[in-house]
Image (cartoon, rainbow, N blue to C red):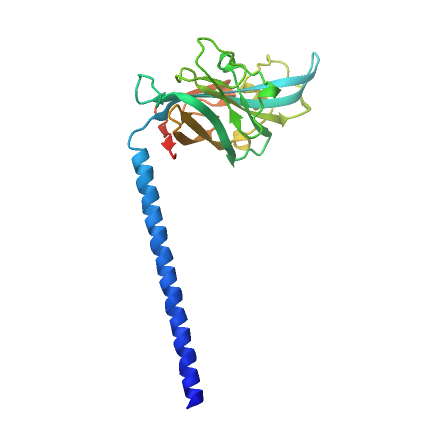
Length: 266
C-alpha cells in the first residue's frame, strides 16, 4: 500500500506541475496578446493622420568613365562606372508649416542591397542637388553607414554637405555609383566618336542584367514636437523603360505617386 500511495503521489505531483505549466503558458499568451493589442492601438492612434510622405521621386541614370590612355587607334578605360542620381521630395499633408510638420532632425540608416550587381562595386553618396545628373564623384560624401543631415532655416545654405531646410524646401539627393564595371578595358574601334554616357556600356559589352541593382534604406525624422517617424524606401536602379534603355545615353524617371508614408513610432 505504501508503494501504491507513493506512485499516486508522484502522479498527482506530475499532473499538478503540468497544469501549472499550462496555466503559465496560457497566461503568457494572454499577456503577449494584450501587449500586442496595446501596441497596435498605440500605433494606430499615433498614425491617424499622415504628417510626412514621399510622393515624388526623380531618378537619372547614365554612365561615365575615367580613361587610362588614349591614342589615335584606341583608348583604355581605367574605370567604367554607372551612376543613378536620386531626388526624394518629402512633403507634408498641410502647406502651413508648424511644429508638427517641420524638421528638427533627419537621418538615413539601414542601407541594404536587395539585388546586388554581378559586375562592379556599388556605393552610395550624398549629392548636392546642384550637381544632379552630373557624373561627379566626391569621395568625402561616401555614405559609410548612417547619414545625418544638418537642419537649417537659413534662406541660403551650403548644400555641398548633407543639409535640409527645416520647412521641407529641398529634396534628399543621393547618388548610387557602380564603379569598376570594366577596368583596364581597351576599345579599339574608334571610328565613331566616344560619348561619355550610357552608350559606353554597350560599347564595352556590358549586359544590363549584370548591373541590375535594387536597394533599400530607412529615413528617420524627428519634428519639433519630438515625435519620431520612419519610412522604408526601396529603389530599383532604372536601366530601361518601355521605350528606351540606358544604352541610348541616359534615363530620367519621374515617379509622381511614389506613396512612401512616414509612420510615427514614438
